Image (tube, rainbow, N blue to C red; front, side, top):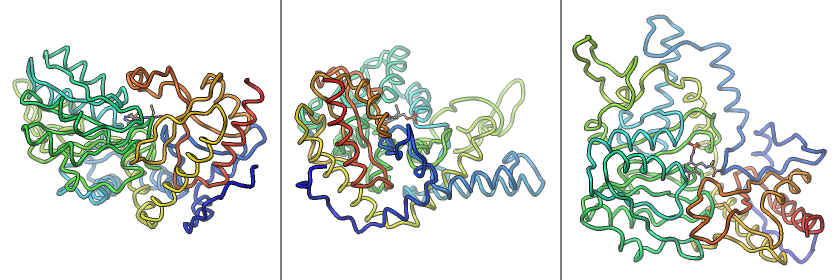
Amino acid sequence: MNKSFAKPVSTFDVANIRADFPILARTVHGKPLVFLDSAASAQKPRQVIDAVTKVYSQEYANVHRGAYYLSETATANYEAAREKVRAFINARSVSEIVFTKGATEAINLVAATYGRAFLKAGDEIVLTAVEHHSNIVPWQLLRDATGCVLRIAPVSPDGSIDIAEFAKVIGPKTKLVAIAHVSNVLGTVLPVREIADLAHAVGAKIMLDGCQGIVHRHVDVQDLGCDFYVFSGHKLYGPTGIGVLWARAALLDAMPPYQGGGDMIDTVTFAKTTWAQPPAKFEAGTPPIVQAIGLGAAIDYLNSLDRIAVAEHEDALLRYAMTRLAQIPGVRLIGTAPHKAAVQSFVMEGAHPHDLATVLDRHGVCVRAGHHCAQPLMEALGVTATTRASFGLYNTMEEVDALANALVRAQEVLL
Ligand code: C6P
């Protein structure tokens, strides 16, 4: 390693944190695991693994259906998880928290219910060029069904969203703005509060895709001024198969159900069915019980930490990574906006991102390569693919060094 790199010292006790994540102790291809793909899915702390094991081994039953002790316990734990989510994002009421199987399902829910009920031909939905496919395709399905129009706010070459450019695509026909809180490819933190004000000024609603945002930023849905906020549990150190849709109570009241089935009804006859109140109205069938409880455990875990120190640690990792990567000849950083969370894409001259990721893997370094489910963004940036390193609270400066060193070694192999 080049000794001239001044490695920042973090006061955050990352060694203690790492001890909570059993998988980080393993090796890959005989090398210590360097996991730099948390934006795709984060690793799980022992506290979450234990909570899930405890439910399955001692407290498991279906929820909202049984009059017996185990079912009542499972129901209480499931609903306690809802309250944990409510408090975590400062929603006004638990009835505003809908459990889904992930952010993707939550966005589809909003498009299929709010969208179909309240948008008509000619109405406009504003997205940005940085969106993940999960925040593009559901709106295209809605466009094809209703004749509404998609308008796209551009991304600047550094990966930022210019508020003046954004203002140009919002107008009297805008009914909905649906944007990422934080870009999964670039790490850009979008100016969501300002955009929410622009949306509301023309009477539009705003949905934030918080998949990456909730991991790296404190989220207060009331402060953000949004109308819908969605995220997935698995990126927040919780299990897969659980996501959250938060929406203002009045919106959930007005929206028709998404799916029909058990638990979402008030009364059913063959002639007519009436709906349960939200959130049950949107949770048809047996819900992801254990996954929701696991998400609650992940939130407990995060609440047990100094989240400001966590954010500072992640920001320090990002700054160090940006410095180290930028100093490797032939490496170009993709995404250098002033406001960024701990996600860094890059390209290496002469090396395909997939080949690079494969070589890095041989060094134990896990990164994602490809279009990152954001093909329109790749086109806007003039690249076909990038390699992406994304950092979680358990990553270390030494792992940034491991990435940089492996990249230099990869150059020797690939170029
Ligand atoms: N991005 C990534 O590697 P799901 O798959 O429903 O949990 O999340 C979809 C999604 C939506 N919006 C954003 C901003 C996201 O980052 C993701 C998931 C992962 O970047 C997997 S493609």
